[in-house]
Image (tube, rainbow, N blue to C red; front, side):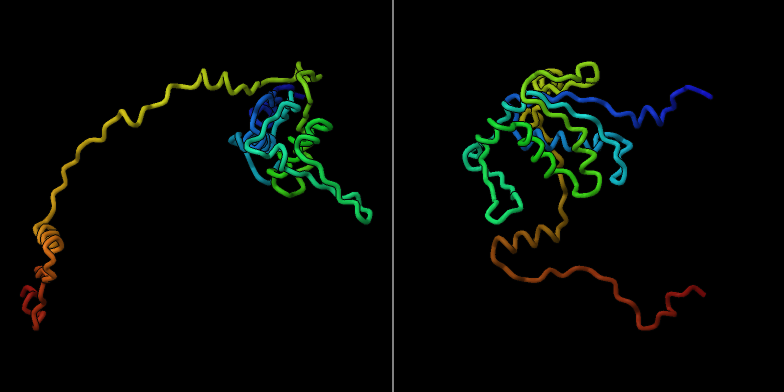
Length: 204
């Protein structure tokens, strides 16, 4: 039997991504992770198939949020018993289980279907830089490196738009003058009048 790997197998191969969550905004980071888990960055993406990649997140305990969400954002769960509603804010959960903060944010951005559990199983989160998947990593997402390697942006303010001269009809000029002067006179436009006897235009 042939042992050759076809193009289809290479296209559907799962890639391991390494994401550093140190001082990264929670919402923006969770959006990028959800897209990678779903496989929407691939040309073979299909909503009905699970073609996403693996994502390894490190430094989860140093994730950042904007505004006053660190004190005001609450996470709730129910134990199932009467009066079992539990609440914990962002700071407390970050000290106890920082992995759950990113996992809950990514879970809320994934489609609510049967593929969500399989996609979340490929999300591996660690509180610090230590992880056992160093030999599996193929892509490293570093925002600083991407900013350095990105091409220089175009200064849209420096570019001047070409001056295109437009010609206006005499009727539009008359209407503009009437609007300025306050004259509401109608403009007579030429129109075609059909003869009473249409057979006169039929060639003999």
